[in-house]
Length: 462
Image (tube, rainbow, N blue to C red; front, top):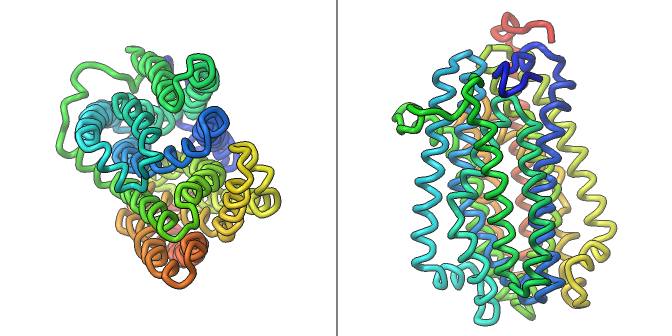
């Protein structure tokens, strides 16, 4: 792989064997995403063991907030990264540099604006997201710190996506690992030694991301690199902003829908659960665990994205097809592993978060139900990211909406009326099943298109 400070953009994306490229790009992304998910899980473990079960419930009510913030960050980060990959495939390096600068500017503007609006109405928003009088102080302490550093978080994730898309997945991986290592060191220090509680966990997160952001900026500030931060690229340009936001609309909708879903789940568990706070805490634990495997699949799709984006831009459709096939097999393997663990040893997993026996039992039950069709959820994720990477925005948006909006939200409203708390839990695998089947059908249609003779002329030796 080429070095960012000397040769700039690698060309092996269009020539190297696909299986080797996926290992080269996906493994760092998987490690990074696994580290990121462990990073959130470690926070939950430290908070649960060091502060208490109510603190886990309070943290769970911040999930919609975090998802909503991530929605805006993903819109810019993923949209910008996809645009970068395509422009690099077309060898339009001037546009790629300007996209990088616009990505930075948009992240700062959106990050600060989101934080200001959220801080003005923080308590009301947290109550709406499912907090109770007992859990509000924990949720407020955590989110106040996170919102003060929201622009840092957006820049950290946005620049990491740019590093990965420009052919430097290992540096993106190192950035995430650095953040995790810093957090593992700082979180117990702030929570246990300094007695700062859940606020200490949030502060550890922000300081970790700040340290990593400085390193990322240093990486992209080398004037000898083809793609680097420099004067003249930060002014927003309509065509770049339109491209970033257009492609980024799909991941924005995914995260925004996830925000709405978690709000409805929290409210449903509070309404139908015997103990609302404990039911929400159970979802918090189950969601954190399943999130690990979802993030690994996301890492696979992130490794896929620059390969597909580059080759699609270069009209190497045979390589696009092969990359998609191999990515699907990776996703199936990851989600099957998650299914086996969550169905087989959920009690053992839950004990890592808490010593409360009721919470362990409820979280284990929720874990078993939630992961029933996680395999199909993984396929749906790959399909969504594939259509996004090749600029098929309508299909990507449709798939973004199927699981969360078209199926899960109605199920979460209807099933609990007849099944109570179990209706909340069973809505998740039913939505996974239906949306997964739809994704398979759309992919089947895409493969049929590739087999059309019109595409044969574009095929080259892999």
